[in-house]
Image (cartoon, rainbow, N blue to C red; front, side, top):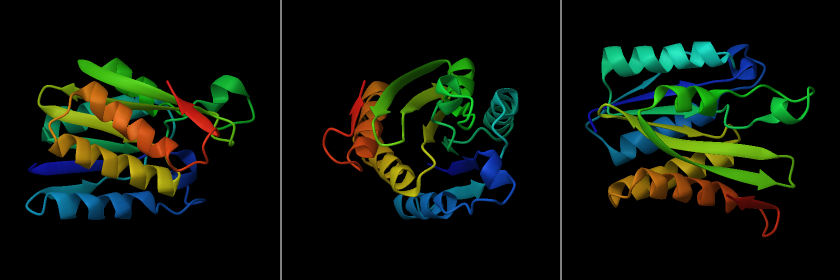
Length: 176
């Protein structure tokens, strides 16, 4: 990898209500895995599907990085209850990517649903990781391990989902 872009999402991150701890952790993982790569953290985006889509498109097409990692927005809370936050990272990715694989996590732990996507547009690999710190950390590590093994997009996405799932007690959630 020669270049990696990290893109946090979330109204709560953008507004400063929640401190972005995920991006520094992921930057560290990328620098350790790819010491020669240029790693850039972009300004957080609001949870608006078109905004996320347009930023992914802009970065992928103008910068042509090897990897883009989107943080947060993997849930779908607003699809289940009007009281839950809006998350559009996965749907923006699915609209943009030429090829992708995804796996969903369903849980009884307050993390009702999460969708992790791993795909490609041209030569750029694009993934999303959940916002909760331990989940983002685990998903990113799983991506790096799977990528190093040369696994397929589907296998990488499944490994990422299973790594997130492993953060919870047995029976609290399942991967589909």
